[in-house]
Image 1 (cartoon, helix red, strand yellow):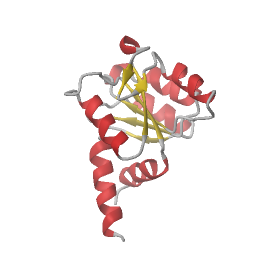
Image 2 (cartoon, helix red, strand yellow; image 1 turned 90 degrees about the horizontal axis):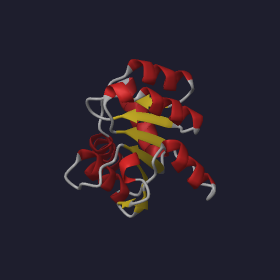
Image 3 (cartoon, one colour; image 1 turned 45 degrees about the vertical axis):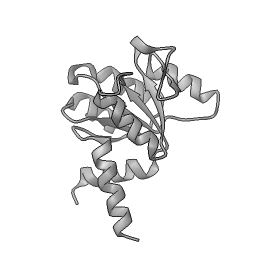
Image 4 (cartoon, one colour; image 1 turned 180 degrees about the horizontal axis):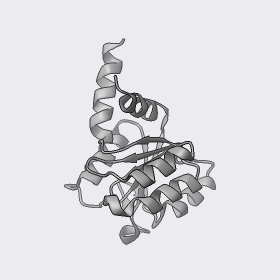
Length: 150
């Protein structure tokens, strides 16, 4: 198993609260159905999308920014474990900065999203980082491996 798969497995095993940055309210969009899949597998999804702020997506309040989401959750003693990003590669660096500032444990860029400056910055700050992979696909693989190991 390569190092990135080991990191992905660690993130999936240890995370409970996942902020989905760039989530769409439209069920046919990858950000929506990936988040829905994760939610159905026991993760708490925190929608982050400035266009949808104040509404609900997948039954959860949607926040304009990661920073606002973290602050609201902190009042309930809830911490964001994983920041799962569905944004264009060139828009990712400020999200990495926010992930570091809120002390997230992990930073995940979805399939097709690659930004070395952002991932290097997040790694340097101590976050576990995965890039250009799908949380839904990796969770299904990880879950199958867990089932085999029983």
